[in-house]
Length: 264
Image (tube, rainbow, N blue to C red):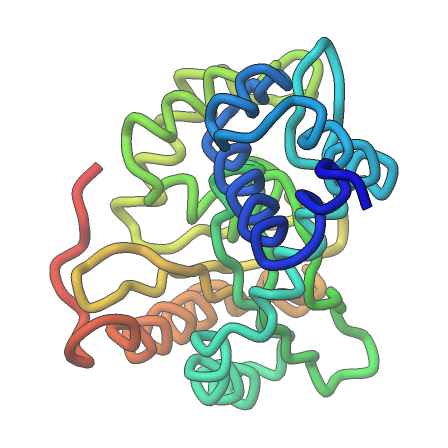
């Protein structure tokens, strides 16, 4: 076995692989082979042997001389999140919400690196006509009620950077950039995001934030179902979603009581 081959096997290689993903998760524009070599303290030849199969399998993307995280990595992250302890803690509250409303309940978390909302826990409605979403689904933040809710609570700097990347004309947005920012401000103030036929015609959603013990938004709890069942009871449904999200808040970190809502 050559020195390079030895360098790509065993614990040292695993550590380097994890370090690679960590470095790339903080690099919005990716990193070149030379930059990765310096960041990881590894020879280019050794790194290249590791990078090639990762690109082939979709864990990395190589474009314009830079490496960045690929779709297989994000699917893996979604799978890891689905086994996270937090969703199991929240599930009793999700079951309560489903039982109280008869609609599907979804728990979403913000993936800052991919700029998406990842759905890590789902309870389907008992109705034969219902909205279904598999665990592990990811959506752009601006498309879904839960995504906009999380974006509204993501912090001013990060939110401003994300909104600046959106091509409103290409996306077919009816809102201008200033109007979209005003909508996010209103969502943050109201503590709930309501979407009627927003992401998909015939489907509506109501999302509320789940906070940790330090007052940071860590997830969105959303109710999803057919628009025809939502229209006449929007006020009731949003009150139930908000109340149960309040009860679920504070499970992460010390204590069980939700602190003051964070300012953006």
